[in-house]
Image (cartoon, rainbow, N blue to C red; front, side, top):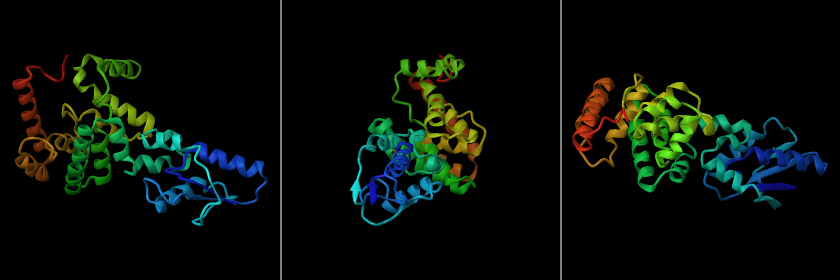
Length: 268
């Protein structure tokens, strides 16, 4: 008997089901496989499935066709693909949190279409800058994809969320709350706990960060290809000196806000 599911990706509920199924049916060795079609390539899904099931020696992953296909857990898989990695099988949560497998899916689900396109541009720009400055391109790409993940929230949603987690931030201008809610959201739901990564999200709007990743994300956010102005000068400088480029971008951004909108984004 070979049981098949999409396993896109494998969830904690699916692992529990397989363990219970084998025990209740007194199956010595239960074979499982991933469906042919999925958002992730089948080879990747099989890899994640093997990793998730590695502690259970009587449940074996095979590439053979399934005898029975089960679809009752696809809603849980969809939630994982929406960023709720805590619902994934325990053995693969770290792999998802440290990788880029579902980032475009998550961004499309959490953001408006234009914001998702912007995030992709920021991610690609950040990854390019990271390569030049000895920072992990994958980490920079992930930061770019996730930096505006809560930007669509209303002011009321942001206020309620921060009130329970970091109420002192509410004294800042609501336009920058999404920097803080994003950091909290990815920590709580995706299991991303690296303080350097989270701080880059927190500082990406005002540009007051100190690390290379802080500077990279801030610069990429303001200079990605979708911006309606020429950023060649800033990007050229960023390739040479991140700190100077971040300072230049910040000076230009703050002046633009003061000239066009008449307020300081840092304060209410």
